[in-house]
Image 1 (spheres, one colour):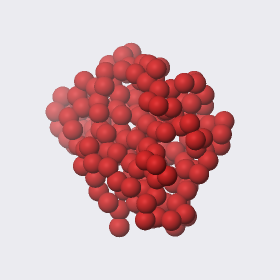
Image 2: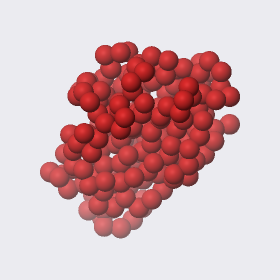
Image 3: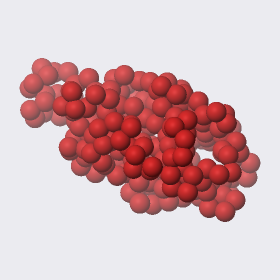
Image 4: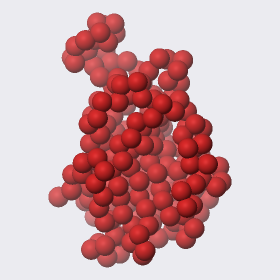
Length: 200
C-alpha cells in the first residue's frame, strides 16, 4: 500500500527496504477539460487545451547544478553515469496514469550527487499563454521496480494559477539512506533553463 504524502512531508525510501535500488518516478497531470466549466470550457468548445508539460530531474551537488549534463530532460534522456533515464516526452498529458517516467538506480548515483530534484514545466508557456492553473490531477509517485509496488504518492493540490513551473519533489541522501520530500512549489520560471539557474 502506497503512502500518501501531503506538501512538506518526507519519507525514508531505503530504510526498511533492504536492497532497494531501482525506482520508477512517475509524474502525471491532466489539462482541465470543458467538463470543469468556466471560461476555458467555452473557449475550447468541449476539448481541453493542448498543454505540453515536461518532466525533468536536476542532479545536485551540495544544492547546485555543477554540470549541464546533470540535467536530465526530453533533450538529454540519460545521465552519463547511467543512474538516471528519462523514458521520453509526452506532448499532451492525456490519458490515465503517468505522463512521464524517470527511472533512477540509487546505487549508481555518483557519491558527490546528494539530491535529485524533480520538476515540471510547460513548454512554450509564454507564447501559448499557459500556466498550471490550466492543469489538474498533478502528482508524483515512486514505485519499487523490483516488485512494481507503489511506495509513495504525492498529489499536488495547491492552486498553481499563474505558475509556469512546478518543483514536484526531491530525493536526497541522508547518511547512507535515501529519502523523499513532497515539495509542491510553484514558480514563475518560464523554461527549464530558468529553473536550473535557481540551482546555479
